[in-house]
Image 1 (cartoon, helix red, strand yellow):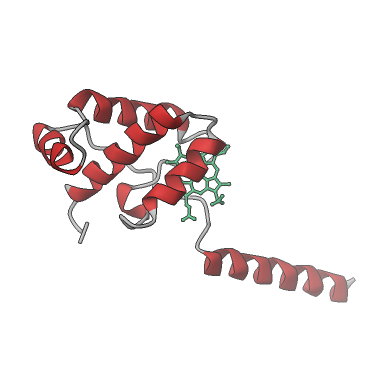
Image 2: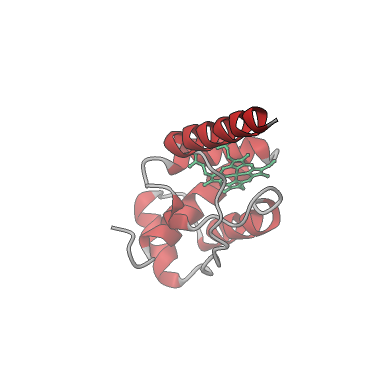
Length: 120
Ligand code: HEC
């Protein structure tokens, strides 16, 4: 019995270690997503010529409605600028959202990220 317990414990510790190393633990950020500001919209337009404040707001709203079903709201700083596109694609699939929503969420999160302290 004692042996079984310590074996299970070891398996749990190893699994947790693998998840941590893989960097794929679900977010526990409980982030408040910033509302879309004129500065954010102006910045976004320099990145993507066909974007608009409305698209960014749609991205924010879609995240509010869909991204806390399985875990807490991730901070825009949870991922790097380089990693967000792949993560957002995976998560849009998880949330059963299409390309229009995915693009809006990605643009919103990158714009929001750019205006947060510590965005580097
Ligand atoms: C159906 C459940 C589900 C929904 C809905 C969901 N997620 Fe996740 N999310 C997960 C799971 C499970 C993980 C951890 C494992 C993984 O990466 O698949 C995760 C991990 C993450 C991570 C960390 C990924 C990493 O590897 O660093 C981020 C960031 C994230 N989710 C953002 C989002 C966003 C943004 C949305 C809304 C578009 C969302 N999630 C919707 C289940 C979900």
